[in-house]
Length: 372
Ligand code: NAP
Ligand code: FE
Image (cartoon, rainbow, N blue to C red; front, side, top):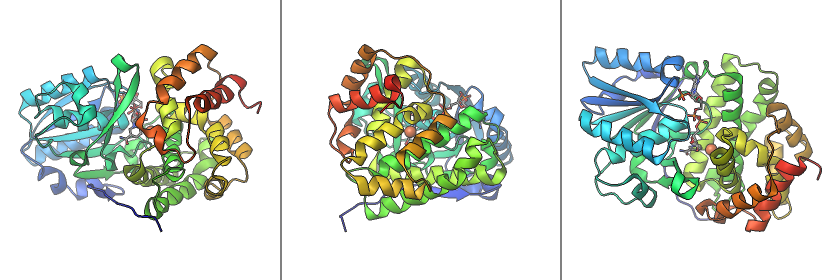
């Protein structure tokens, strides 16, 4: 067995009504809450109304910051950090998909550290961040159980992550009712992101016996949900399974991090505005073929857990879930591979990967489109 460290700093509450059933896990975090959410996700999901009524009942003051953009930028979290500092809040409630939850982590640091947001990427801060409670409204990123935050950095024309154990949310409340308002596309894209976390955590140089348990369990649950996803049958049981699987996949990457599918996907999001999960999904079949040449046993284990026979079957599923119809030039893909190879996560891919390898995966996925 390989050596490993396993860490999670988050108390997880899962199931219907888990927020109201465990009010004290929020109210004990402080005296004034700074609520970080997106423009619509807090309201549409119902989670914002619930948290406000809970805080009112407990006589806890709050201030709402609902300006988090998708794929939050350094500028966006800077504004949030300044507003949080001014509010004198002593804890944070993050509500939303990965964007508000990741932003909540950055804001928790910026509110108490006089630094430029770019310094987050190198963990250049000294004061302990404010404690965070997290309420996911997508079933995708698993950010509610990770210590990672991914931010858009225009200066580097990409997204980059920072990871610090002090930003593990202190408590996470996973109630699938908050994911019911997602549109079909948001539900599908975020589910693919979560599946991608489980796969990349499994095809990872630092995967361990223990991270594999979470990854394979997450993949088996996805496997059981794939048909419903394709048929757009979002019943409450499927929603709940996807939320659970997304958390398991989050626990996986909290140990391993992601690898090259995410690293390449960041450019698709940065330059073409493709949603995060879809960006990964466009690349996953070729990424599996690429890894299969060096790690056939583990790629086959991924397919088996998903209850699929071959990578071709996997590709057919992806083609049912997402449209691969955006035009790319070879010059664009050259630029993307030169950026992706610099991501820290590239070194963790199970098969050692060069810039040229990344270019080929993207060319096959986005220009040749399945004519392998
Ligand atoms: P997102 O960017 O948070 O949200 C995507 C869209 O879904 C937004 O328009 C959002 O609305 C909407 N939305 C969210 N919940 C909804 C709901 N219940 N009902 C209706 N609409 C809803 O999407 P995401 O895929 O969850 O997060 C992506 C971000 O997370 C990326 O920046 C990615 O890099 C990051 N990420 C982080 C980790 C990690 O470990 N920390 C892992 C993977 C990805 P609003 O705009 O109103 O919010
Ligand atoms: Fe992701």
